[in-house]
Amino acid sequence: MYLKIKRFLDIILSFVGLVILSPIFLILILAIKIDSPGPILFKQKRVGIHKSYFNILKFRTMRIDTPKDTPTHLLENPDQWITKVGKFLRKTSLDELPQIVNILKGEMSIIGPRPALWNQYDLIEKRDKYNANDIRPGLTGWAQINGRDELEIPIKAKLDGDYTEKMSLGMDIKCFVGTIVSVFKSDGVVEGGTGTISSDEEMSK
Image 1 (cartoon, one colour):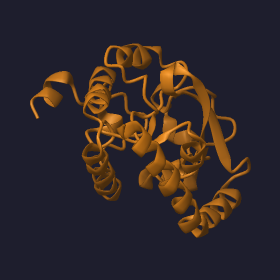
Image 2 (cartoon, rainbow, N blue to C red):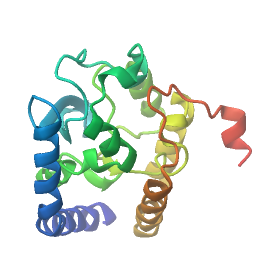
Image 3 (cartoon, rainbow, N blue to C red):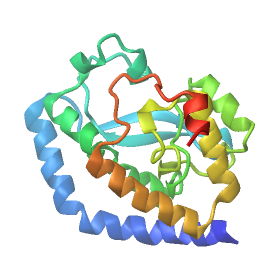
Image 4 (cartoon, rainbow, N blue to C red):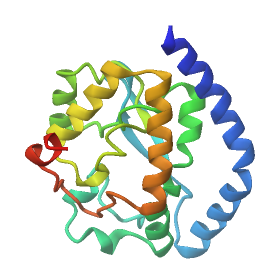
């Protein structure tokens, strides 16, 4: 029953969000165009509900000659590929705003596991153990407020599984509020991070 309520809230909130945030969208579009040549939006193949594929939308934060379909942490010296405006967008998570369109289309939810790259086979496989691939991926989620880029893949998958098991309105509100706090504090943002929070550290919390 909650899945239907969750989808209804996603539609309403994403539509309202697009309207309210349209001035910010315009400012960011202009900033990206002035800062570097290339498209405004960045599209990338990601894993959706039931391991289906969709193109996630982001504001472009990297140069157009950046290797494609390569996670940031696998790039050599990732900072060299990120534009000046891109660094600000990533630090503030504003690069994620176009995903409101993905939410409106039903490819994502506001809260849920962050969608894996199509070739992140290790993360996808570990999420299978917790049925975390069987719900819509989210703009933010339980793992994002508990470590984000600092999390190792096994811990990230376990947290995604915890969310899947405990999914409720209360859990979603907790994730939403926690995300706002994390964004303002820039918690867990590590460019090129491969995960520094180990299983023992996470389980000891």
